[in-house]
Image (spheres, rainbow, N blue to C red):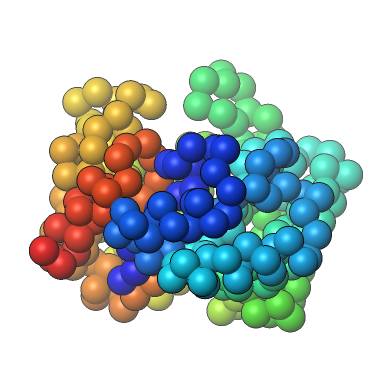
Length: 272
């Protein structure tokens, strides 16, 4: 597996060259990039600057592990408004284009938001979110195939796809090798067992995010622990990934000292 790290672990002011060189010096093979409202990549970034970033990364000896955007929390496939759902599809197509220009094979997507972590009432019904997500992904799978980029739906705290069986069944209904899962280890630990999720999702996993989670703290505070100092059973997780045949990037998501994170990831993978 490649060692990868989210760009957000580094200072936001870094340009592409500094980011790539910093990641390489810290011991990483790849960096996961994010489309934001400002910063290195935005929804207004055209093709040539994206290709320039890809070339800069290549020159530094790192690759782009994946592309994601938090904008899916505002516009997503499950929204009650048809116009917003259309915006989410357009955002997906834009992300697929940008992923192609950046030379990465995975676009990470939050498919629907039934509710936020502290919201007492749902934004949409669970069943509606599921039906609309299936409808959208069944259309967008062709866009993903045309561009050679896989859509990877994420398990995040959106009160949606709360079990690995449900995520597996949704992906099987979409029935496309171009639509899979981005599995986040720490996010799953809060409500289940990551190794169990991996065993159920199996070859449907396109990308894996590595974070730890301390069950004794709970809530968002559970993420405030370095890798190997939380509740995740890392040997069981690595064994499950091996059994699933996963050999893509293992991407750290969170804060911390990048060289220390890289050392911890290597220990987790038995590389030192």
